[in-house]
Length: 130
Image (cartoon, rainbow, N blue to C red; front, side, top):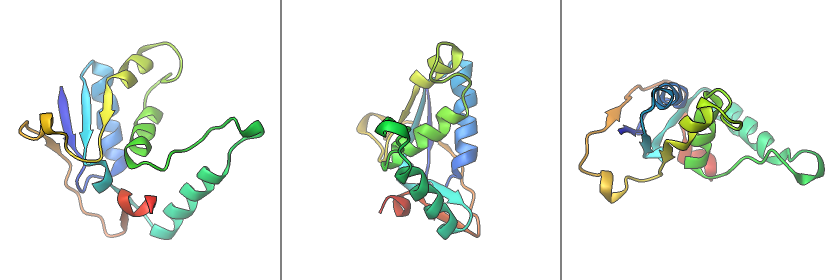
């Protein structure tokens, strides 16, 4: 079991690492999802996410994009997996991934993997949801 601390981690790099480890068979837990950063222009990032949320599809069936931080992170990780929605190793790997906004009590004392990279232009996940 690997616990990844999302504080000041770039979303894409964290997602690639989590997807690769899940495909190897590891159980992945991502904590502090509201502290993960997305690099780029703040205005462009907000506009793209709002556009995805307002597009619903034909007959109101979907795809629907969540407004919750940990669900956004989990969806990005799902995009890095092969066949995450159908049968196969991607689906099995997706079941091994858990994401949390805070650090749950059972994982507070355990060792965490950190990705500390500061970018010049970025926005935190907690600022997107507002």
